[in-house]
Length: 287
Image: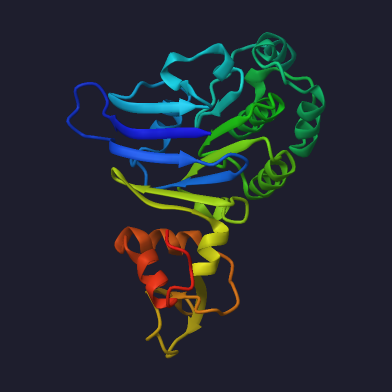
């Protein structure tokens, strides 16, 4: 488990606090959507978890290891995919041979399967790749490490629409009960059908820390035509065909979660989940 307790962090001598007394427990065996606006600390949090940054105060633990100490036992079970990929001017075969030794569970089978999924040949020089191809190649390597923790920072940036769809399929196919994947993104539509736990941060605050199952039981996401009643809505925003609406479930059939709508609503109304719980007449467990 990843445990973050009373985290304080700012860069250098900057007075801007990225995190202040921030606490979060990240459950195992889930695909976590780490959501928030640009500049809210999503990438920073991934680098703190992996030990590439050090907190000013507080504790960051990965399976009991202090992340900033970067114990080899922790590092062999954690992999981070940065937003911008910078690969050396070598063949992919040499890159694999040099780097696989750090990951005892590395799988050639997974590597070649993911390369096939992304329609990338097994042999090539890394300098001949576009930005999107570099990202897919590095994600193939990252998935092949078979680490317990996989941290992905804006993984769909630079991918075209077909590649984004293939990314979702591939990530889902490589998920298992022993793996935890954290996907940091502001492009919420790219991951909303993939994740099963939502962490939403805004400024130094944690606004949402719930499974998608919990959110589905609590909130309904609807599209209503112009002129339709809105008196039961917790949140409304205009859309091309009327209004996008969030309402309490009140025992009705669950709907797919619209993460962009949820994000917009929570940022404006941080107590929205509590309002929904109250409107559901106490039928949903407290968050």
